[in-house]
Amino acid sequence: MTIDLGARREVVEAAYAEHGAAGTVPEETLEVTPRRARPAVAEDSPIAGGYHLRPLAWADITRVAALEVELFGASAWTMGMLTEELRGRGRWYIAAQPDGEGVPAPLVGYAGLWFDGDSCHLMTIGVDPRVAGHGLGGAMLDALIERAREIDAISLLLEVAVDNERAIAMYTSRGFTTIGLRKRYYQPEDVDAYTMQLPLREGAAGS
Ligand SMILES: CC(C)(COP(=O)(O)OP(=O)(O)OC[C@H]1O[C@@H](n2cnc3c(N)ncnc32)[C@H](O)[C@@H]1OP(=O)(O)O)[C@@H](O)C(=O)NCCC(=O)NCCS
Image (cartoon, rainbow, N blue to C red; front, side, top):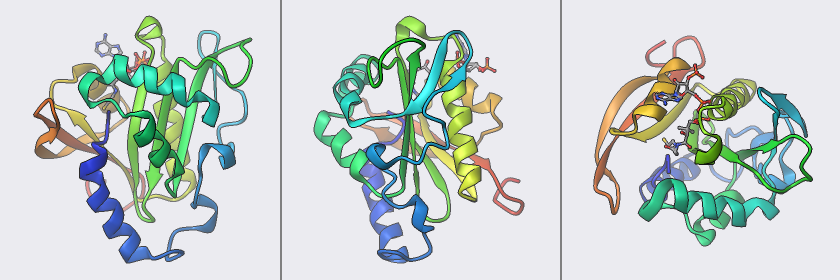
């Protein structure tokens, strides 16, 4: 996973305490759950190699949970964690799917972000290992960056395991830089995480 949901909860609660029920969070970005996702990624946005992006749907959750286990092992999000996450406010999740397949089955990639009213946080991104290296991860990341810009976020932030060279290369290729180290962030693996940031506005730290 990109985000350790337990560790992130403190940040979420602090942000909601600060912003309140409505606060400074733009209305259209509240409760951007998959069912209500405003398709800034159009229903079917073509990407390279016979795949397209679409909003994630509730019917995708079983498939996402299976991919989570395959991709993240012991720290995979469970069905319960996924449900809680997708119901959260300010979320925006997308799926990558082969062309010609019915909606919403069967996705080969998924990614999502959370807008806290100031910055966006990359919550997770994953691609089926059988189709890795075909540009799907990069295309989903580009869509999330575009979305974060659209809603005028200051920056896009993420955590990544220090030994995840492939993901770090992907983030670096999009302009993210490392701004911090979170010791023993991923549990139970007990692995450190880098915090990486992509500034999106003039004046954001690092821009
Ligand atoms: C990381 C992940 C999402 C990348 O998805 P992908 O579809 O394989 O990636 P892409 O083919 O779009 O490549 C994106 C970038 O990754 C990097 N990359 C891809 N394959 C790589 C490889 N074999 N070695 C090093 N870097 C590689 C490149 O920087 C590439 O940049 P480019 O778009 O300029 O070519 C995917 O490998 C994955 O799901 N990994 C397991 C889950 C995970 O670690 N998620 C991130 C949590 S922080």
